[in-house]
Image (cartoon, rainbow, N blue to C red):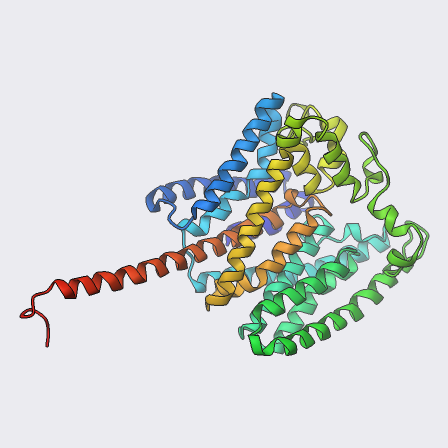
Length: 448
């Protein structure tokens, strides 16, 4: 509960209220969790972490080490890179060694719901302050999460959980719709364009995942109705905010992305190259330029330029990578670009394998588990899809509110699936042992 509060508030408080050192609270908790996981894991032998996950994690560690040695990365960039890439992974193993009850999981989800609702008044105030100071842009609307894209990812994931609760009978229709709409409003006033794609996808995946086989047509109808209501709220507000934009002096609407000649193409690709200004880097450029750069050499193509070696660090020049000055605009633009530059193609493949395994566990768990973890599993394929898509849209690995929560609940799903598999394996074994015991008894000793 304290870690959840830290990842939701630490950056905001460090930037706006208290000392900047508060921003490092999540990393401090990561160290505590790492020690706790190791000690408890040794005791339980990590029995709820399947061999397939160990294999992928070990492959990822080997890839990172190869990238470090191949590029002779200094200790400073390694420390800075480990901070961003590794700090959330201990949360994945936490549910495997500390099983949480449904009551405790409910408390965690309730706390997260409270933080989700808190974003609305703070986001509204930030939008108002932006208008008052002449900076009418959604980039200044981020709630307590310090980046507008992070706010959108968190709230869309929250909507998925709410809808999963509804289709599994944990929330009535009125509460679910009200809660989902309250979560959605901040994503309309922060002008995150990708919401128009992610919201319908997330709603449909979640509702279809949780629907009973005979009720899927009805669920599709309810999903369509919710998407229509959400669109009726999102599009007018977005267009109004765009029409009032005093920064660009140019009115625009959501339809301009698709109808205005060259606008959408310019947003995605600007023909940027190595050394370009970050503002000139489009979403496609942030992927194609890093890929083009590392594939000039087979070793860098496989293992990248080394963890932290293509990034700049706020900790100082000694923590910045050798390629940071040349490529920072790509490593800081999107997670996909950073992965290719610093971990190479093999590192990206390892991460994609983890996402696929988590999705597979979610799909299977959603069908067989009746507890709260099963409800989360209903929503999780949509959440994984959101995280995967936004990897190529924003530097999500920077955002502790995304990475910590994602890996924690993913670990919960993976551990619970393993627990059910072990229980299924033990059941026939117990039945066989009982049968053998009865057969070995003498006729005189058997009960009549």
